[in-house]
Length: 226
Image (cartoon, rainbow, N blue to C red):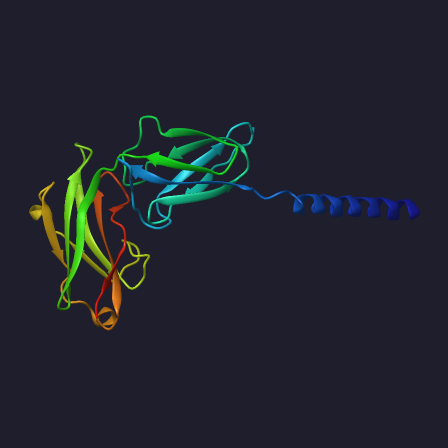
């Protein structure tokens, strides 16, 4: 009986110490941050939509570290020091890269620009209130010459996190009126009652290629209504 008790006590003690060991593992202390860019400009996206992938070298059982992007095109991840491979995933508003892997040797806090090639971009965007209407002006540019245009849309919302998933108003441009490289307008039409009563709304524009599941966006802008 004493031997049995001793064995049980020893096993329990070992499990307790092992648990303490797990609890005492150091948390990652280094930060890899950066932004996704095209020609030096940040590429805006849907918040927590497009992702980057990180893989750490030197481990036989590797698992992916998914890095979600903020809507302004920035990202940040807490990591241990080491050699990493950063992968630009294809399910995004940019062309899959011929070499989609960027090697990162993380020895200190690091800031990194990740270059991509969007299918389309939007430039020269502006928003103007006219009565109960918001008029957006923009220029759609084709970057990948084989890309086909699917949607050009204006989004309005109560939240700063406004995109094709979360919005209050969505208005699409007539693609037959879209001339690439030339300014076009998208009027919102009369704002709904739930927006008209507000002091301001958030607005952004998005363009989508038939080759992508995500939009290339402009930065969110705050539009005063009163």
